[in-house]
Amino acid sequence: MATGQKELSKEEVQARIAKRVAQELENNTLVNLGIGLPTQVANYIPEDVTITLQSENGFVGLTAASEGNIDPTIVNAGGQPVGIETGGAFFDSSTSFGIIRGGHVAATVLGALQVDQHGSIANYLIPGKMVPGMGGAMDLLVGAKKVIVAMEHTNKGKHKILNECSLPLTAKNVISLVVTEMGVFEYQEEGLCAIEIHPDYTFEEVQAATEATLINKTK
Image (cartoon, rainbow, N blue to C red; front, side):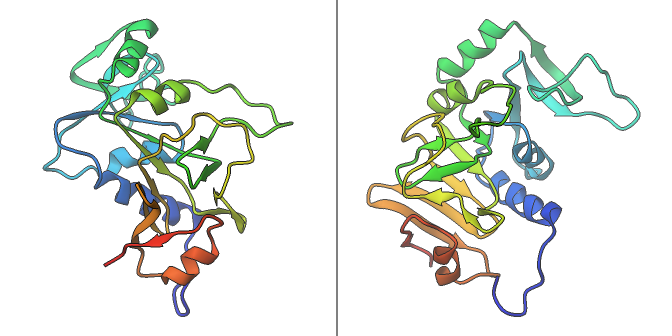
């Protein structure tokens, strides 16, 4: 972080990322938000943008659970209580994944353990650690028209944007955009491009926190 800037808490970092991701969502589209940090994106969707949220466990029209009015039978793919908006619909898992595999999801926002310079992503398994499974990530990564990764730039100082992922891959060459607290990074024909750097940082500081070589396309 640039000299003179205060250190952000984890909550502030995640809020910054979620707020920036929300700006990437197009009006009147179907969007899937992954568990964890991506769920916060729903809190920052601009008022003039209408987004229908899909949950791969079987419904569209997902909303945040209302305070004091939580229905434990309505949960998202991560098992968290949520609500459903008027006009939403429930359906079985095969229909839900038919929507995803059929290319009807305009964008998916997922977290990641690692991404690399080729647009590959590892986001479900650390060898030796118990995990619940991949969930719908593999289907979303190849089925959604746009893949946005929302994650913290490093993990306790260790690079997460790498030359090559070292963890087991969820999917290869699928990412469109990576948003971290440091900036916005887009996969273009010539490579991984930094298209926006947060004012708290310089390009040199971001590159130092990134193993993959970045192409500076900031204005």
